[in-house]
Image 1 (cartoon, rainbow, N blue to C red):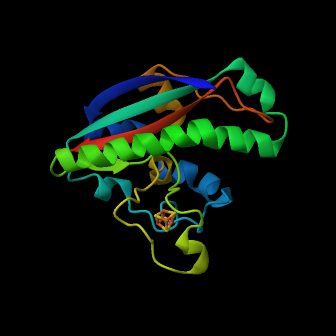
Image 2 (cartoon, protein in one colour):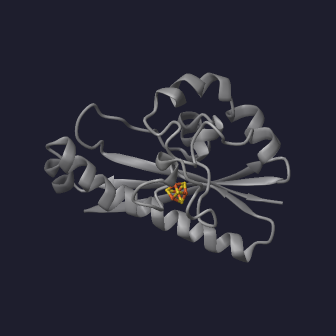
Image 3 (cartoon, protein in one colour):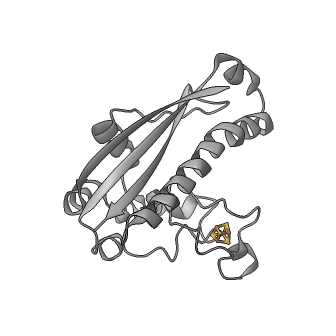
Length: 182
Ligand code: SF4
């Protein structure tokens, strides 16, 4: 169904923020997203990046490229099928990536994770019902929610181009997370 390729990069948090974080540029795109105000890992309410990452010295960027097999691409004929296939592949990879990084947090004192995309720990986010986060111990803010330029991070730090398609699946998707260490 798919194969994966992993690329990583490490750089000082100060350089990461200065070169790749621009919340004002992405604010309108965030407001237009259906997750805005509906998922606790997404705006509004996400901490300011400069303050949130001030305690950390180094950021480790992890990119997992999910390459779809030709038969998977061919099966993505309708929006429903496409979403099912994406969840079974890219979605599964994102969950595994988060679980791995949460394990790593336990092994590295003082570390923290910014996740690849919105939180998907619950079938329905409690925020939609006006309730507090149901699993705060596993919820990590989405990396993009802080206003990072993921296109440039992927291209310049991971050597990967991000792809989009109007319909069906692109040849691959890339899950990008960040692991911060003191
Ligand atoms: S853990 Fe559940 S309630 Fe909390 S942000 Fe994630 S989906 Fe929403």
